[in-house]
Amino acid sequence: MLNVYGVPLSPFVRKVHWALAHKGIEYNAIPTMPGDSSPEFRAISPLGKIPVLQDGDFSVPDSSIILRYLESKYPETPLYPQDPELAAQVCWLEEYADTNLVQACAVFFRERLINPKMMNKPTDEDAIADAQNNLIPPLLDYLESVVQEEGYFIGDALSVADLGITSAFVNAQYGGYSVDASTHPRLAAYLARAMQSPLVKDQLAKEEQMLKSFG
Ligand SMILES: N[C@@H](CCC(=O)N[C@@H](CS)C(=O)NCC(=O)O)C(=O)O
Image (cartoon, rainbow, N blue to C red; front, top):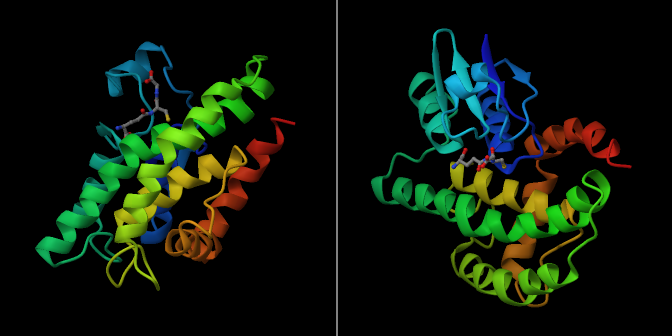
């Protein structure tokens, strides 16, 4: 069976769990914290990052590469459109989500959950204000200009763009942030649809136990 190293509160690990669930592939989730320094983990994750996928003797890190591997190996229930332009667009949106969007969303998660409840550190309200006022608005403006009014983020089927974007916003939501429907109505409506989808609801229910441990 496949092994996925990481913890699902990581937006990148969550993407991999969602992709596997969407494709109906069973796997073992191997709890591993970011930066794990054990030689066994470093051997399969040279950058020390989660997630890593292990498939027998083969292993590969990085959520986007893992998703591409899963698509090649299990092409049923695809996560990439056939159309070349649409395929490029969903990969770009996945990249956008995995970089600047995750970074901005992570501020709320870190400052309102990880630091005060796990690291015994005070919340940095200036960092939250900076994310809210400077980091997030241009990202939301861009996403608002691309997202469809109905259905998936783009295209007519679930794609890696949906996984990346929704997963990033889950972390912001855990940190008490939500997109304002009065300024970004299409994006807010999309996120409401995505969060209510059976795949996402089912997967987030599995994270609840871990969240409760934060108190
Ligand atoms: N591009 C990578 C990013 C993975 C990543 O940054 N993971 C974080 C956890 S959310 C991590 O393991 N950080 C540990 C570190 O940077 O040492 C992916 O898509 O998997």
